[in-house]
Length: 435
Image 1: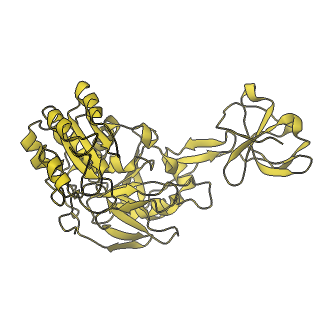
Image 2: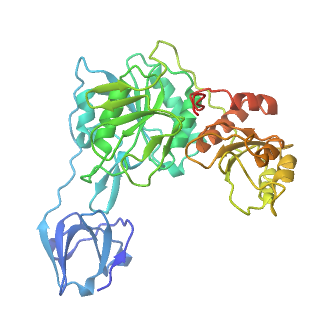
Image 3: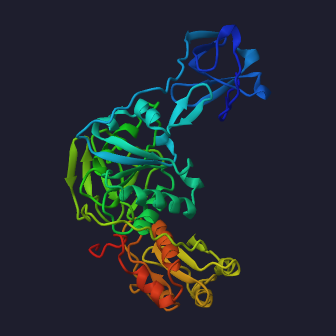
């Protein structure tokens, strides 16, 4: 018997004997029986029957090889009409929905997901957050996977969030977001929003709400708790470990996704969480800017022509010519260890080319290592590269460095001023206490 891995298909198509897409069925073969949810198929795939298994995967079966499709349970129609009551005495928050797994639910008919982008749909699938807070406002600037975002999307989020922060009826803001490039967005919002008056909490889920192992509920509830706290920072709130015990509130400029699928995928790098967050409260772990009565002003000028380049053994330096030719203003080199790249001792030395391109491009350096800081003074190779004019960015994360360099170049192109600003700790992106 042949099995076909399939994607997501959307077309209304009835199945044998009144069985429809969305029904729970058994598909019988000569020697095997498969159980799952029947999925809609395209007209062009009418000879294939699609099934979503209990583990979440979709598979396809040639119709001619199937002996019987047996109904187990009729699918239920989704009813979105629910009533949300504002409760006096509960804190009021705002939510900004941008997409990602946390803002989606399984649609069994199409084997994919639908967006949760209204208060009613959120209440239906995430009632726990409404036990803690009133969601006074819900904004949806766009719905995108995080890999489809760029700086213009970050600017939109920052503008929406600043307006919410300056609303005296709102105590904090929760932003739902996809995981893959969440670190870039949290860094961008940290710089764009500056010193805050209230909490700005980004949260996510690795696993959708229809899965028993979903991390979405705890993350959202903890995000709501953090949004009503005294921590007036851009922070990311998510599972602290694989269990459903508690979350961490992590600095937006010092956090990175370190696992593709674990529920505790995000970790603070070269720093500490602001707090341990449970459904019942917060335990403070490090210093933070406190809630205050100031007004937030967006500062979101951004130079788009900045790139991040990873250094690898044997890499030719003439790759830098591409960035000069295409008018790039800044470049972050993710170097090895303490901040090294091939030098004049290498067959493909970078020293000469780096001196040449820095007449046109600002070049900064971070490390490929997860922990620690760059230091070009330890070895002679590092000192040779330092003399070319590279700005070494201490313990800054590479994604934060890319965003910050774009932010700084949006203010000035003066090399000395850029260097000064890049080495100024604006939003906690540098940790002077790190050994």
